[in-house]
Image (cartoon, rainbow, N blue to C red; front, side, top):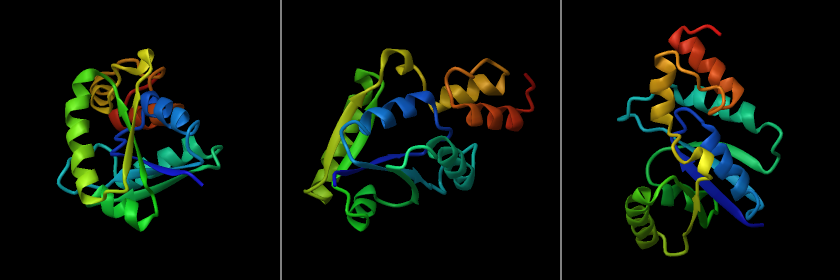
Length: 161
């Protein structure tokens, strides 16, 4: 079985993430969505909220599991018998950073391979940071995030339909 990991903070999950997830599932048998818990980073959503939202969106995808991780991704991969990392690239500017991460990960775990998937055009400008900012001002994000995420952000920011 070909198993891969799609790591990220997913604060919050966007339709851009879903695009990468669905396309990754075309090339792997099982995808582990690894939600990063970084206590040094200020997140809008708690790790539990992020996992709950992702679980709700993924409930019909039997070949997806969701796990929390902290520390080095290579350690998570070794511990979960994963040798493929899926990374989404929105723009060419993302490549420099992602390439450096790939090289470091490969240096730490030589059997780890990284697969880069370019975002589809309609999702290439979406970021979790941008979604949070637009939502905080009451802007329309319903077509950029799953329904449960849209509802959660409205709840957090006190916005009504």
